[in-house]
Image (cartoon, rainbow, N blue to C red; front, side):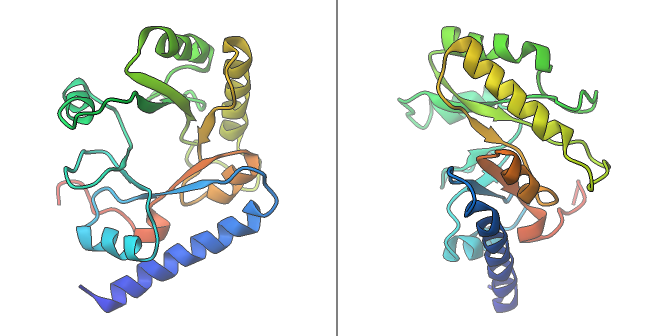
Length: 204
């Protein structure tokens, strides 16, 4: 274990928390910080854990701890997530919305959000619709308001109104724009690079 690396991650985590508090003090809803730890060594996760971090994001299913699952939940992974671990409660899910309408991104069209959410509520007893999420467009002008955040909040309001459900969670905002996302109403932010540094190239 590297004392220098531990100090670095602890310092990064404290800085993000400090930044969050600068916005949080003006909000009524607490925002959950999800440390996106995928592709990082276990030691990095333990340093963050020892610094008080409890919510981590992964796109695979480790067997020794519970995580926020980020990415596509494929059929073979659903079985591991819900059956082999003896899950008895519905799995909480976020519907990803392609607010930027980019072909390279996953997510449902904004025009289909209500129908997808209705299907989950009516036809999927093993799932609990927990909220909506989006990934903002990369390369946009950071000096301008984020249109993806505005679009997702509009989708949230539409789903809640048309389906008659209570307030849903909203997951938007990453390392480069989490403070803006909080100001726009995000209740979950996903921060990786700012905490752990950049990801290694694929294949390494």
